[in-house]
Image 1 (cartoon, rainbow, N blue to C red):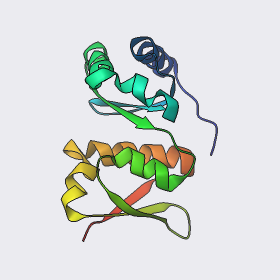
Image 2 (cartoon, rainbow, N blue to C red; image 1 turned 180 degrees about the vertical axis):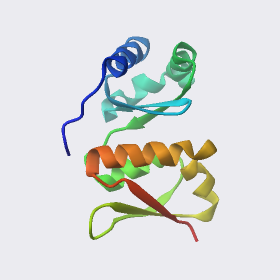
Image 3 (cartoon, rainbow, N blue to C red; image 1 turned 30 degrees about the vertical axis):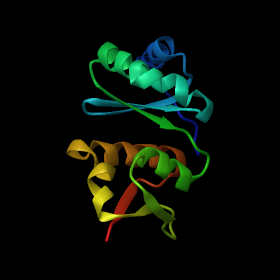
Length: 141
């Protein structure tokens, strides 16, 4: 994993998110009308809040859709966290380490891709950033 550099706007967004939720954000990724915050496992409860109230506060403050994803050190767990609640059966990294193949059920395909393809785009950015694998194939027979 290479060192991640955040710009001033990203740092301001992370600070606002942390102030609103009380959760520590490790990273932020933007995709269109969506912001994704990567948080540590122990901070997921804080980030979400009771009945999702902290996510709602963040949505209101940023005026965008908010995804909160639990950080993981390994690719398979991170992929499962990114695509939750879709059930991911298997995560394979290609021989060259540039392509990830996600195996799931056909009924979860829409959840994996997300509205307008935003979830898969966020996943590509995150997996490229942390594992150098920027292409994701979905195998959902």
